[in-house]
Length: 102
Image 1 (tube, rainbow, N blue to C red):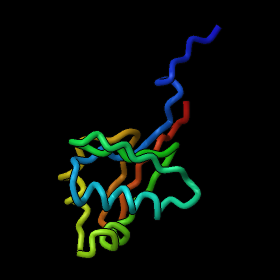
Image 2: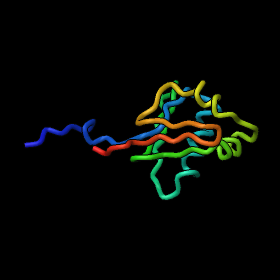
Image 3: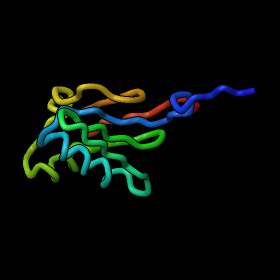
């Protein structure tokens, strides 16, 4: 008999960001950069959780478009309170993912 809990079956990934301009831009960029995926945005007043199932990529260029100004990925790191899944970050994009699904 299985006693799996909701946490055992959670394959959600994504950033948890301090509330503000960058968090809002990242949430919008996540929806644009991941077509066909359902992107959840949970506003907790002090922070925003952006999540989807399995894998999410967010491009710097899309964040810049949402902000209307240049953006460097290290500014994402400053606003990143936490994240779900594994993270891969470089100058052009950030990727949240699971290597193994539960």
